[in-house]
Image (cartoon, rainbow, N blue to C red):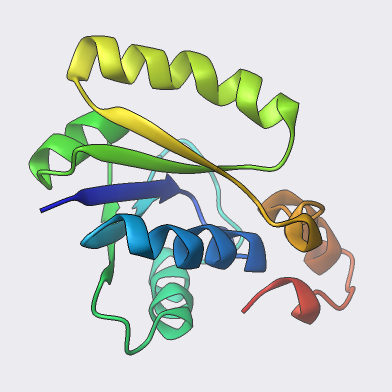
Length: 145
C-alpha cells in the first residue's frame, strides 16, 4: 500500500492545500493529512476545529484521513507505515526550505518526499496570509474550502 503523510499546521487549511491533496490522490492509496502539534506554538484556530474543517473538505473521500501528531514528522510516518511525505511548493523559496528537510528525512529515516507544484491559481495563498487577513477583519472566504 502506498501511503503518504501530508504534514502541516493547517491553521487554517487553504484551497492550496486542497489542490495538492486532490492532485496527489491518484499517486497514493491513502493520504494522511497530519496536523503537527507544537506545545510551544500558538495557533489561531483550535486543533479540533482544524480537524473538522479538513474532514469537511474531504468528506466522502475514503483515501484521505486526518490525524494529529507531536514530534518528528518522519517518526509519525514510520508509525503510520507511510513511505512518503507529500509537500506542496508555491515557489523556489518553498523548494529551498523543503529540500534540506527532505534529504535529511530520506537519509536518517528512509522516508522519501514527493513535491507537487501548486496550481497557479493558488500560488498566492498561504495559511499565514489567511491568518493575517482574519486578524484584521478581512474576508478570507475565497481562500479556504
